Image: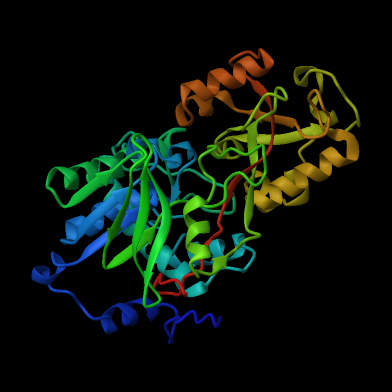
Length: 412
């Protein structure tokens, strides 16, 4: 199989504009003649289905949950980045592009990453138009906060519920198109196979999870927005339904797989409390923004965090990476935490996978949900003035998808 990325040529700043201009347009009268199948209703699938329907295409949307709102995108917490430079701190489209490529260990396709940085500005406007209640400053302007992997404040957020609020916004847009008759919704339906005609995906075979009935649906295009292989690692923050079933069935029909090794390890989650657990609970990465990560300097120190003086604490991320501090990329923070635990400075019941996060609670209460604050308080029975809580790394995202070229077309 020969993989051709078909990346646009020329200066990276103008590649996508030229690419879009060279594409053949479909006039509004013809759009209603085309049918599109969308599998998945998360932030990617739900918003894409709503957008395509609003453009005029006829869309059939499938999900195995009882409602599109049950998609796992609801679990995202910290925020969404965009190069609007509201803070006037030197942000730009090129800086977001650079930070994203660097944060991905330089493995990403740069043309697509630059396009992501370009449209990030418009995505925030779209979300606001859909009613997403982003945090705002006292004067009414959208607020920003810092986030891992960047030295500028470009993250738009809705406390610790950003994924939930974004999903509700996409869901509302999707439901509007369902009401207008442009989207046919098929909940509680699992994709069993991809229908391939002349080397192109032209439909899917599905099973109704309530009645067991098996049906076939055909269309002019099939879009998979079903997520990656979320449970290769048993203790993951992903839902148990995030199991890559759809993309695996596309792979069996000839689609190539991309990024099988790209597993994101998130540096903050609530620690394991017993062998009965089947998944972990994510803690917002904003905790790294509004807090300081540390471990005891002395190996095997089991004292409560409030009894360990400042002189006996090692703020290891600030020591290792002074320019970024606690805001290093996730993989860097996770590796550093594992190194500290491997050296015997880990804390918690197992002393191997947990360590301590100190948070400034006055800021935390304004930026993270009250539930998160209460959870942290219960973890260590701390006073509201200063919270210390245990946290550990967790497998959070798998970016494995069917391989696609720059036009998002897979190869068979």
